[in-house]
Length: 238
Ligand SMILES: Nc1nc2c(ncn2[C@@H]2O[C@H](COP(=O)(O)OP(=O)(O)O)[C@@H](O)[C@H]2O)c(=O)[nH]1
Ligand SMILES: [Mg+2]
Image (cartoon, rainbow, N blue to C red; front, side, top):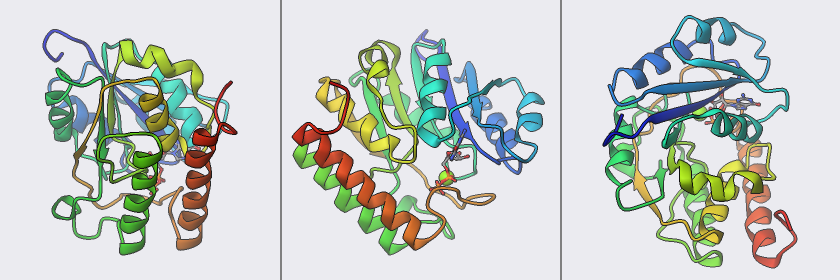
């Protein structure tokens, strides 16, 4: 609970058997997280079994993808305040306090992983990923009239339930470019939004989304197309 409000956390999880149980325990250990929804997409490893060892709610989503898993998780939450993160060791449970501190004044608190001093040694944030995220975030900021934005790929975010209701039926992205769509929809729907730095640590287990240069590069192009497409009207629900 945070100021008498129920706090839910959503974890998308695909083949995360190595760390998901620890991540769930870490976030619950903050004492403010009331509910964790872990959304699996038929992982091939023991992710499901590891989730079921914990107090988290296990959800199996049929549509494959990072965006599909997060959309499903958001719909399953029962809290007034919802936080998204990844169960792969990169995000720290204690950073929920940073996000929560801003939610008196804002509907949406976005994390950014590009603040140098919070990028841990061996975290997967090389110069290309860092500059790429900043540049694409600036495009989003300027085209969609955002606050200062420096990351388009950070899963760690907070949204209040009342604000989520305004955008939940508007998502179109089931894949890896869900984050910028979430950000654009927040801005288009006039949700009060701010971005703050979060810790970004070394990943446990294998990356599925930005595992190599070309995958990251292609994702960047897809994100740029989405950001311009929303501005020109050829992306997004009519
Ligand atoms: N349920 C589900 N989760 C996914 C899928 N793809 C990625 N994820 C999760 O989304 C998060 C981000 O993916 P990750 O592999 O960490 O990409 P990276 O952060 O770019 O290295 C992790 O928690 C993954 O387990 C998917 O298809 N389904
Ligand atoms: Mg990750």
